Length: 219
Image (tube, rainbow, N blue to C red):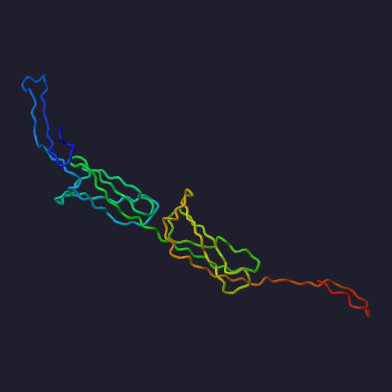
């Protein structure tokens, strides 16, 4: 074959008979056997244009058609993906082969995943430490872990205080920071009640003789 790699060229084929065959000798050249078409003669469409972040590779299917609208079979092209895990713009490259040459590049969007963080209500006795682990996050990918700081409105006696979650950090199963792939919809506060600490006051025993001055009272 010749001229079978350049776009828009007519490929030719040459058939040479084997020397040990006395009945057939020489070479026959067949011109214009087929035409090599550029990738610009084709279109590629993806199964989806946007996909929410899942922590896994996104691999949209690809449909490739020629300029007559005919769907090409997969043996006419190869598909590769780039930047197709984290939130942002991912790229699909369709590299043509067979009777086609060149490549088609398509992009799709991996959107951030929504997550909501809520501090749970706590009721404490004055002087007791706030439980820093009482919060929950909804919307995380399986295997991802969120930690955050809980800040109380006060640690004095209060009936209607609040606990504010803030400064969230999200990591995957390998401990890698993946917070950039999430959109925190809200930090929802929890209620806080702090009650007075009960105390007991015990007076010291004292003795006195009738008529004497009262001894100092202590406790």
